[in-house]
Image 1 (tube, rainbow, N blue to C red):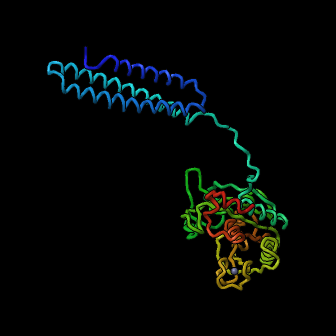
Image 2 (cartoon, rainbow, N blue to C red):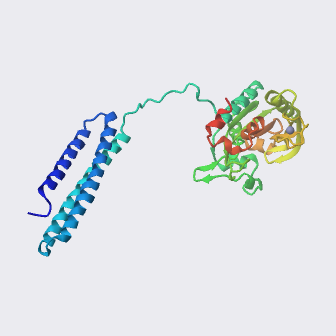
Length: 358
Ligand SMILES: [Zn+2]
C-alpha cells in the first residue's frame, strides 16, 4: 500500500482517458465546432494543473513529511513518479492542442480565385505615354521611327560620333563597361548604325533607354530615356532644323510656345545649340515659377548641324550632303510637361503615382 490512494489514481486515470477521447474526437469535428472543443480541452488541462498537479501532489508532499522515515524514500519516489506522469500527460495534450490550433488557423479553406477589380484596369506608364505622344508628333512631321539597341560598342557610341578615347566628353558620358561592350550613353549610336546601312535622304527618330555612370538624385539617373532625331539630304541647313523643332514644339507644348536657341557644343554637331521654349506654365510672368525658376524659358533639347567628320565616318560625302540632329531626354520632357519634381518617381513603381496619369 503506497501513499497514493487508489481512488485518487482512479480519478486521475478516468479524467485523462476521458480527455484523450475528447482529443481524438477533435479529428472529426467540423471547423465551426472545433474552436469551442479546443477551448474545452484547454480548460481541462488547466484543471489538471490546479487540481492534480498543485492540489493533490502538494497534499501528498505534506503527508510525506508526516510519514515514518522508513517509508519516506519509497513514498517520495511514488509521488515523484505520479508528478512525472501528470506533467508528461499535460505536455502531450498541450502539443496536440497546439497542433490542432495551427491547423485551424492555417486551414486551406479560403477561395483561391482573385476577384477582378473593374475599377483598376492596367494602364501605360507615363514614360510610355510620353514616348508614344512624341512618336506621333514626329511621325506627323514626316519622321520614320527606328528601333535601337542598348548594348553597344565604343566605336558606335563614341568614336564614330567624333568622341575619341581621349576626348574630355568621355568623362561626362562615362558608362557601364563589360566584356561584350558598353551600355549606350545616348541614342546617337543609332544615327551611325542607320547611316552605315542606308544613304540619304533620310529623316528618322530613334528612342529608348540610355545609361550613364550617374548617381541617383532628383534630376539624375543611371538609366534614362532619350529621343534622337536627324534629317540628312542635299542642302539641309540650320533653318530646316529651326523650322522642324518649331513645329514639334507647337504640336507638343501648344501653339503659343516660343523657341530660343543658344550656342552650345557637342562633338557630333557643328554648329551646336541648346533650344529653350517659353514657359508654358507662366509665360515668364511669375518670378517664383517652379518650372522656369522665373526666367520664362525652359531648356529642353540639344541640337545642331551634323559634324562633317561624323558624315565622313559613315561614308557620306559632306560636300554633297548635310543634316541636322537633335536629342532630348524623355524624362525631362515628362517632368516639365506634367510637373513631376523628381526623376526617381518614374522608376519607384508607386501605384498611386502611376495612376495619376490615367
Ligand atoms: Zn515659368
